[in-house]
Amino acid sequence: MLQFYLNNQLVRTQQPAGSTLLDFVRYDQHLKGTKIGCREGDCGACTVLVGELDASGEAVRYQSMTSCLTPLGNAHGKHVVTVEGINQARGSLTPVQQAIVREGGSQCGFCTVGFVMSLTGHALSSQPSTEASVLASIDGNICRCTGYKSLERAAAHLQEQLQQRPATESLPWLAEQGFVPQYFADMPGKLQALHGATTAAAAGGSETTAPLPAAATSLDAPAAARARILGGGTDLLVQQPEKIRATDVKLVYDQHALRGIRREGNTITLGAATTAQQLLESEVMLAVMPQLPRFLKLVSSTPIRQMGTVAGNFINASPIGDLTILFLALGADVELVNATDHRRWLPLAELYAGYKQLTKTADEQVTTIRFPAPAPTDAFNFEKVSKRTHLDIASVNTAAWLRVENGLIQGARLSAGGVGPTPLLLRQTAAALVGRPVSVETLRQAQQTAQQEISPISDVRGTEQYKRLLLHQLLEAHFVETGLLLEEQL
Image (tube, rainbow, N blue to C red):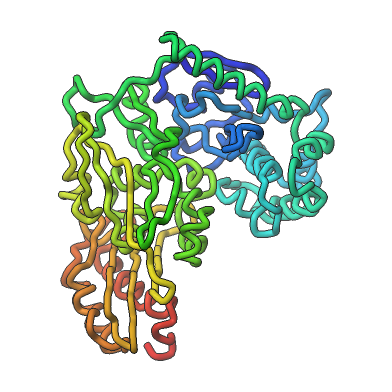
């Protein structure tokens, strides 16, 4: 049985763990403020807040999430907040709602709730409110009426108000100002009690808190073993929502052993359930890749980055998986563990056998990812072109790691997506760079080699010729963005 707080009410349900939080909120609990839009995580109309106890166990950390792609099981032990859970008594508006009304930020109103919840999540954040951060908080919300300027003004007004927010222990101030109801102050204790009861019951073998069933990792496993490992849900709940709902799942999103990022010597290791947002916020990652925020800004939206896991992106096996392309150029390996706890390491580039085909066995699960830490003098870059700059699937994406000493390229790794049936590590292209001077001539040779190494096809994201041209240009971008060549040299 799943247990969590929905607004100020403890709910217990035996609904399938692989069903969506959105359907539970609307159809089981009849809270219709959360809207059904795209069901793909694009529009943000279904945005809710999900809070979990932080590492101290004394405070709750809230994140905005698209409930259409949130597995219901991932709400277990947490605090889920819909718009009904932040509304004030007697119909008065919260400061977020007031700002939107004041600036005319709502017309048809369908998307408004999503914006309200995202901005409320920003107000609850422990990070300082800046012009950039308040706008980033609504980067997963789409409005088809306003043209966004009124919503941007509302966000700016909110940001001014939040300058008065205390840097620490801000919840009492937020409740006093009406951003959230007073019951939020009780939630850390309620979640502590819920976790304590769950632990005690599990120790006694209670049916209500028994662990979820173990799962195999292959979508193509025999029917008897077709329980699925489910992380953030941002891929599977788009592709196969009804099938996932009807299938036993093993949830890994909240397994702390599969989270975390650490550096040991020259190796960086992260758990398979680490999210894209945790990459973005990691001091370990930022120390070796200062440009990571710029790269990941091109990857989905804030709510999706807070849900999607790194290993989930790998195992989805999309030829244009953004995180896959990034980690291929980093030289990543993955650890695979099977049902008998046998462990083996495999280069990420060898995980893919063909389109949507993996070289791992049906009972193997990715548990750990590791890669060599780039040196401070190494050049690293990630590029992506899509029909929309943000919140879109790539037409072509590519990453490059280059080690240059005394004007010569001593090491290179290049990856590319959208130009073959699998995410590609361009080994021949990298070899064409190694040992050669940094020059336009060297770049041109690599561009020619890359054209021979790729096999794009024409589809809805572009023709074969267009994708070839994109990769040609993006290889130039790697050299320009890392400062190895000047744009006027090309």
